[in-house]
Length: 187
Length: 187
Image (cartoon, rainbow over all chains, first blue to last red; front, side, top):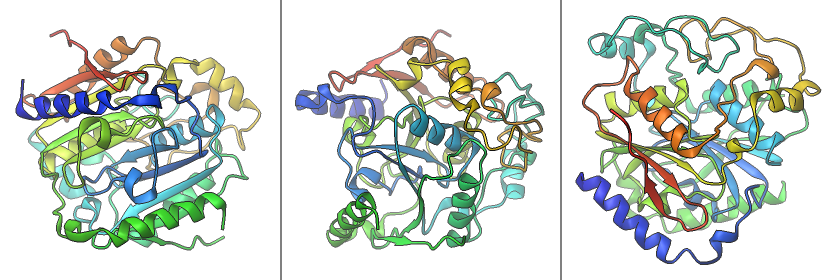
């Protein structure tokens, strides 16, 4: 077993030992909200937003972007599990600020196993037809934090599967201070 | 300001006050691994896998599924930020076990703003053409935990943008005990 895997399993055994009454938590989030944020290792949404187990849905991807998959998750969060407010939280010093689709395409050009793959129902879009090639994937990079937050809140807001009434808040997490700064969303 | 928003901001101010030397953490994950797991409110990957801020990437969506967007994030995690091992962790009592694409389509049928939307570059697939309609979205539901873990590890393993050498581990998190149980992945 790898060192990392061993460490994870050891930490998990310790966590499980003190699990206590968390075994009784119900499936729907107790505080009825969801957070969409970045996968960045420095971010711990439970800590920086004050979440206990059972409180809120946490959706994370590279950049905390409002991808179709993030919206799939938010719609399930609302429709099946009753969340009523959503937070979109990007952050300073994000890796997604450091490259472009073109750079990623070049980086990947040599490591592609094949030039294209067929869609097989995993795509977010309905028929998902089309080919995947490093150069043409939308990596959802970010050029400006405030701009990307506004763009993503508005994309979620305007999505046909998202209910009109749900409040969607935009924030930037500052990796130097741990603070959340609100981003005003234009009407 | 909503009650929830107020609580989040109050908790965040407390967290930022004790932020200390976390302001010096570098962007690449210190322990060089990534976790893909579910958005479920009961799961706290930092707690159940023993992660401190700066340790590992955490990607989360409804089900912890290997969607194109999760794979986008994993490829960025590896190629730009140096992770070398990945964990796919689904869990017992997952919401994704409780419904089907058909049920979700019916639930959404009345709340669709419009019948279709155009792809505008946000889709994971290269050209992302096609329409979005509740009934035809792949919600990536789960019929069996072990099966979905195997399916997702294999989908990542066989993806043309994923390097051959990276170890990918499959686990089920038990919501009643807090324990991670390994899922053997067939060759």
